Image (cartoon, rainbow, N blue to C red):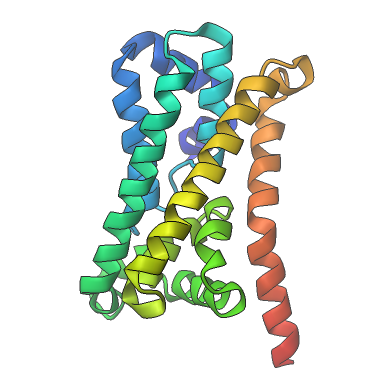
Length: 214
């Protein structure tokens, strides 16, 4: 657990080591992490926002990989991930949440599904775009859409639009801001800040729902 937390807080250093050790293979490995984070409901704990920011900052710092190649590849990865997630939800979504398998029950917590459904009820199709910036909800939004919240022809437009907004904003923010001394020297605080800002919409939504029920 300590190593896991250290990985998140010092993601810039780990990504830099990653680039140096794996060179061009890093394109594939970074995209694989993003695909799993957006495409598999059992891996919502993987880094998303902070990884994109760290990738942009690392490319600006040491090069090795090219931003104009990395961004399109990451876009493809998250769009593919979302669509795999959507069709999994469409085909086997409800069965997974009804399973008695102890491992899956720990990973597929009903409250994750409930939070995402609450987002759909409040924001409709915009949930797919807004969820991009909310950890956990980001992973479950396509899954819930596939279960029945949205038909595919409507979903795919929001999916692509959300992917463009998320990947470009986070990666370019890292690229242009990551080397500013105050950001570079306090990267762990920046990561915590990104996480805090990302989860705030979900927290606000939960608090509103609780206040309504009281």
